[in-house]
Structures are given as C-alpha cells and as structure tokens.
Length: 108
Image 1 (cartoon, rainbow, N blue to C red):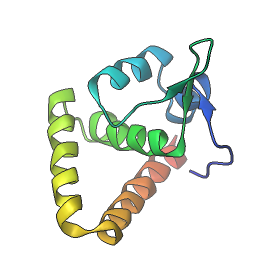
Image 2 (cartoon, helix red, strand yellow; image 1 turned 30 degrees about the horizontal axis):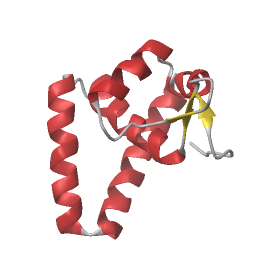
Image 3 (cartoon, rainbow, N blue to C red; image 1 turned 45 degrees about the horizontal axis):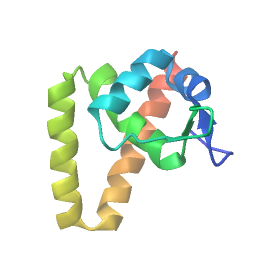
Image 4 (cartoon, rainbow, N blue to C red; image 1 turned 120 degrees about the horizontal axis):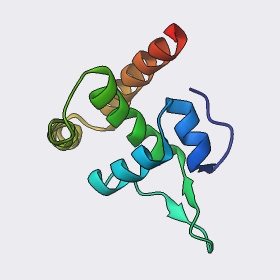
C-alpha cells in the first residue's frame, strides 16, 4: 500500500481497508496507537503512522480472527518485543504485515 499524501480522511482510510467509518471510529477508541488528528470541524485526518496501526489491527482482527482484546494483547506484546528487538527488526515485521495485507487486497 503506497501512500501519496500526508493525511487521509476517514472515508479514504475506510475504503483502503474495506471497512466502515464507524468501525474505524470504534478501533480508535479501543487502540491507543490509532490517534488521528482532528481539524477545526472535527474531521479526522489519518497519518501514515495511523494507517500502519490500522493495518496491524486489520490483519489481527479481520485476517487472523483475533478478538479486540486478543489484538490489544498482541499489539502490547509487539511493543515490548519492539523495544527489545530494536527498530530494524520491528520495521521488518511491519513490512511483513504490510505484504500480507497487500496479498489479501490483491485476492479481492
């Protein structure tokens, strides 16, 4: 998934993942790693970091069948592992997740 802009609207991000706007808003309340900024009108603007976090949640919940609590635990575990592994290994893991998501997207 190649991102060409600094920020994306909730509708654009929902379309990227094939989910509803309300699901993204729900995930935002459940996962602290998803924290879009809001403009003066209250519209959400998602950065690349937010989209990567959504991608992790999407893979865990939608592709791998994790519950919300299970995904939270997995992400917390990844954070702990990430601090132990270092940025390079974590980056590699994220690229693997992104590749899996792209494969799923291509299968649609």
